[in-house]
Length: 369
Image 1 (cartoon, one colour):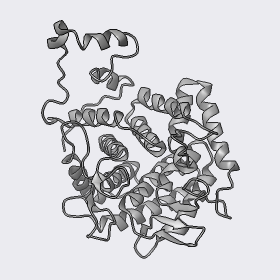
Image 2 (image 1 turned 120 degrees about the vertical axis):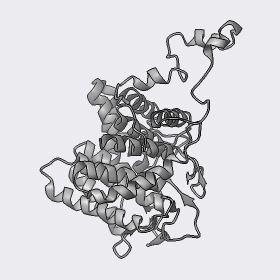
Image 3 (image 1 turned 180 degrees about the horizontal axis):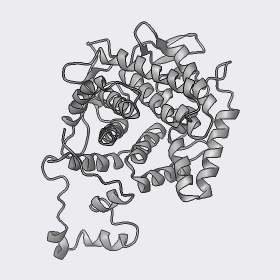
C-alpha cells in the first residue's frame, strides 16, 4: 500500500481542496469569475483529471466526494467521526454545528421527521469535541439536550435498552453499537454505554457463529431479520473499538470484556472473507451480493486494535487484503464502489457511510506508522 504524507493540519483540507470552496469571504466574486472568459484558462480544474496516482490523492478525492453526498442522521455522524479521527477539526466542528442546526426536540440531525434516538446520537462524540475545542456553549447545550432525550425516553426495553428505531417501532439493531454507546462514553456515562452494548449483544449475538443478527423485533419477540448482515457486524466491531478507547484506564475489567467482544466478531467475520478481500452482504450466504464496506470496517477495527496493543499483529495480513479491495474500488471522482448501498442497502452501490469508512480505515492505517 502506498505511503501518504503526514498532514494533520486543521486547515489542510481547506487549503488542498481550494477547488471546492473559496470560503465565505469573496464568494460572490468567485461565483462571477467562473463565467469570466479572461479567467477561464487560469481556473482549470485538475483534481479529477485521470486516476489518482498516490494514496493521498485518492483520499482527497474521497473526502470531496463525501462532502457532496446528502446525509441522514447516522451518515452525518459517521462522516463527522471520520473527519474527527483524521484531524480535520474544522470540518468536524462544522458537521457538529450542522447537526445542531437541525436539532429537533433534543435530537441531532433531524431531516423530515426522521429522528431515532440511537442514530441521532451518532454525532455526539464530535459535538462534545467541538465544545472542548471552541468553548462555544451551543455545543454543550446541544449535547446536554441529546443526552437528556436518551435518559428520559421510555422507548426502551424493560431493562432499559434503547430501541434503535423511531417511536413507536420497537426494534433492536446491530447498527446500534456504533451510534449511541460511543456518545455515552464520550459524555462520561461509561456504565450506561456498557449496559447498552451488553443489551444489544443479549438480543442479537450468536456465540456459535460469533456474529450479530441484524434486527430483533421486541414487540413480537422474534427476529425481524435474523441474517448476519455484514455491515451490521462492521458497525458493531467499529463501535466497540471506539468505546474501548473512550473508557478510562481504571475500567480494566470492562475494557477486557469489550476487547473480547471485538475479537469475537472479528473472528466471526474473517472466516467468511472472500479471496478478493470482500464479503457477501449476508456474510455466510454466498447468494447475496458482494460488497466492500465490511472490509473497510474490519480493517479499521484491526488497525486500531493492533495499534492499541490488544489485537495480535497476525490480523494485519487480512486487514491489508481488505484494504486493497477497498482502494481498488475508488474511482477518479473519489467514490468508493461496491459498498452496501443507497437508498435501501440492498445492493452493491455507493453510500456516505462507505465513504466515511474508507477515510476511517486509511486514517487508522496511517496511524499505525
